[in-house]
Length: 264
Figure 1 (tube, rainbow, N blue to C red):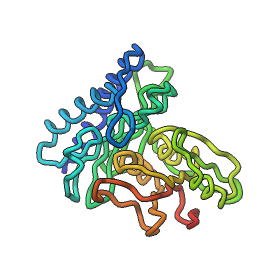
Figure 2: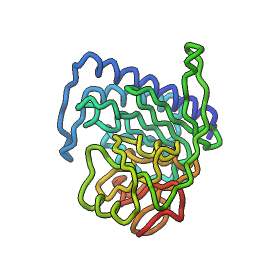
Figure 3: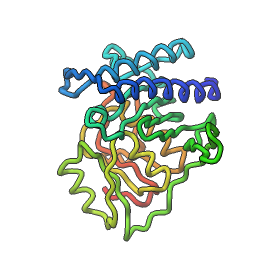
Figure 4: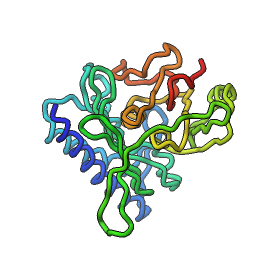
């Protein structure tokens, strides 16, 4: 795999998809349908998926591609593949919170090694470089159009005053009960894969998810967090979260800044 090309293509397609999503978002012409699992899907999901899928097929014709919006891809069995959620946080998109993202990740032997998470409404772009190190692209206010890539690094948590980040739309009793095991001084709510990115940027210490998620929801954020020195742990096996599982469904997990932080 040409990782320099991979990271460039991921970033470019995420930005293109983000532009299309914002075109629909700003005009307010959102068409909503309900999928078989009762989750919503919009015309923005589908438009972004088309841009990303076609771009990836052209750039990497020999690499398996799994995307949320193409049901036939959910039955692939492979260790190395690209995993896409063209609009993560559809409910946030519909509710106009701004906290939705474009997620693209590369999975190698069950591990997300490279990824991009782009939140077009709030203009935050997180990505890995060819070596898997994570950065946020930040605009230089003094020079219009110029940007720098700021390295991301998890913070050193204070076990007596932790900051937890939890789902804005999907928090449940089990997750609240798990959070109660910790000494939490600050609780943040965020939508989509931004939760992983907040930990990667030192803005939070951990994110527990004791509820249903799919691999395309987590893979890109997982790659960003790993590249910043963090972890995503399967709460059942106590091992790193693994990808390429049957039907691509995740177990309960916690994303965290330090290994020693986690309680089971």
